[in-house]
Image (tube, rainbow, N blue to C red; front, side, top):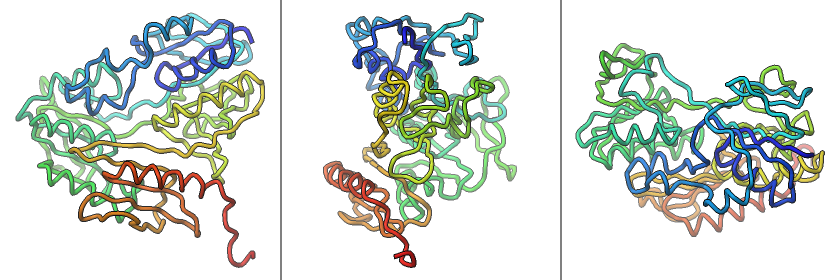
Length: 397
C-alpha cells in the first residue's frame, strides 16, 4: 500500500492520519477536507467558543510540529464527491482525482435543515465558521430561538442564556431526550432550562423559519409564531454518505462495517459518525456519533486497513458528556426506552447522582450528573458487564 487517502479532516480523520504514521505507514498520505480549516476540536463550538472563553486558535487538534511530522498532502476546502474503488480514485468537487490504494472514510454527518433556514440571522453551530457567526449575533437581550433540543441544541440554549439572551427552546418531541436518557430522567434535564429562564416549547414541530430582510421568528405546525432576532437550527444530522452512492459500499444510516470498521471492500474503512459498525458486545450494528468514538475507532480501523483484513475489533463502549448551566452530564452505554433505571448514588433532587440502566438482567448503560469520579467507577463496571456473555432466557436454561 503506497498511498492512503483520509477523506474527512475532523477528529476521526485526524486520528486516522496520526495512526497511519504511528503504525508504520511511510507512503504518501492525503487528507481531504470540505472545510478550509486544519483539523479542530468541535465539542467546544456550542460551549466555550460560543461563550467567548475559548478562541479559534485554541481548538487546533495538532501543533505545528505534529502536522509537520504527519508529512501529509492536505486537500482542504474541496469536498470529495465520488469514490470509485475499481479505479482506486476519490473524485473531488473541483473535478480533480486522487488515486489511493487504501481509503479511510471519515466524512462525519451533515446537519438537517428547515425551510427558510438560509435567511440572514439563521445559524448552525456544526462548524467553526458557523459557531463564530452565531457568537457575533448573540447579544444580551436578543431573542434567540433554538430549534432542536438534542445535546447540541440544549448546549447552545444554555450558552446563549448565560450570555444574557432571551432564549426559547423548541422541539417536536414531548420529551426530546427520552430516547437518550430515558423517560424517567429526561424531565429533570429539561427542568434545568426553565429553572434558568429558558422557555421550553415541546410537542409541536417547527415548519419553517420566518424572515423579511432577516429572520423574524419560526412558525409551528399549529400556526403559532415564536418571534426571534436570532434562530439556531439544530434539528439533527444524517451521515454524510450521499457522495458514496454507487461506490459498491453498503449504506444504511451510515457506511456498514464489521466490528473492525472494515467495509465490504477491504481497502476501505470507515470511522466516526459515518460508520455503522458491529460492536463485539452488541447483537446488531450501531452508529455512535460521539467524539469519543471518533477517537477510539481509528487505531483499530488503520490496523485492519494496513493488514488487508480484520485482525482487530472495536471493544470500547460509546460515551459522551455535556455541560449546561454549570452542570456536567456524562453517559456511557446503550440505553433503550424500556430499560430499568436505578439511582445508585446521590439523588435526583440534589441533581448530583449516578443512575444505571438494566435490560434482561444485564447492565447496559450509566448516567451521571455532577458526579465525575463516581461516573468513572461505574463506567468501568459497565465495560466489564458488557464484556460478559448475555444471560440466556429463563426458558432456554
